[in-house]
Length: 414
Image (cartoon, rainbow, N blue to C red; front, side, top):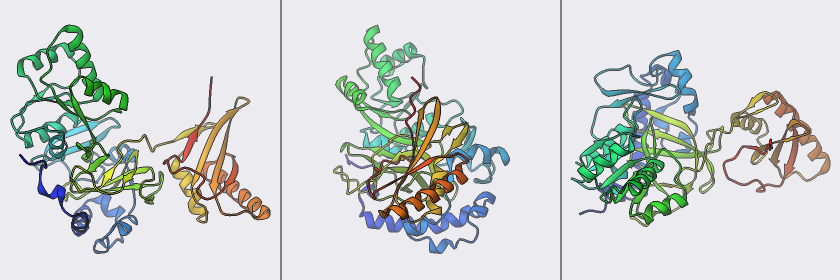
């Protein structure tokens, strides 16, 4: 029995990278047939987008903007073809964000995640992701079916009925949130139900802290994380190496400074952008609003795909100061006005029952007169862009951490 779902998982990284960017121009051309992408990609020669540096010049599409785009031009905002037989299912996620499922085996790229977690042909899977309106249930259902694993379409909740199903069908694997897996384990212990058949799991949709990982492992279940979204399916998945998550085949993942499309150095935390090489469902530089970082090197499990550290929080750090929303994009705009600066961080505090904000900016300037002039210029730019007055503090290059945080809300209301 092979340790890998497909041999492409172990190919030379340079071969994979060349293949991704050889296929990208055709996806860009297919996207250009759709009105919203045609507008976004106007003037871009797809044949020139042959590497990551060229890709980084394309505009970013923010997931947070999808609800307004879809509302203005329902159902898909001109980013996808209208509903047709090419789609097998049509979904609505909170927002609302409207999303189709394209016809095809393992349309959501979940099979590799399940295989890496030990799911094998013929093993029964208890799928507790929701099948109602959102695609979560179908993402993992289709992956299990691609591995020829029968699926119990349980959905979330109704815990005691699920215990009966488990005792009757004896599933070997679980898919769902880590929280609900713990609920099942706890309820089974309290009720004296035997759910010991479940020995493996793929969890997603919620944080899976080390404490919960340890508890579930101690209770006999090997649980692996998958990073999945309604737009892209499974973006990355954990393997037996337990060293980050492997980026799925057919996807290009970038980590950029929040509020921008500018890639950060390897290892630095930033926002996740995904490009999907599917002409029927083109996704180009979609900013998911999540933070992660690229891990260097190749996984000890033998898979050679790019690795990310997993979910490290939200990149959408929008906060309200003195009644005004301040967004990471605005701080990025300050940086564009002053390209001589390094990292920027807006620190929001509260004193004397009032909000205060301080822009910390990396600069090599040490001359007092030059520093004073720079502070004045930055303060003016900050107020012009955010419409809120703030102070400015100059710090040495490299002093601000590369943790992806652009806005730090340190207010204490106690």
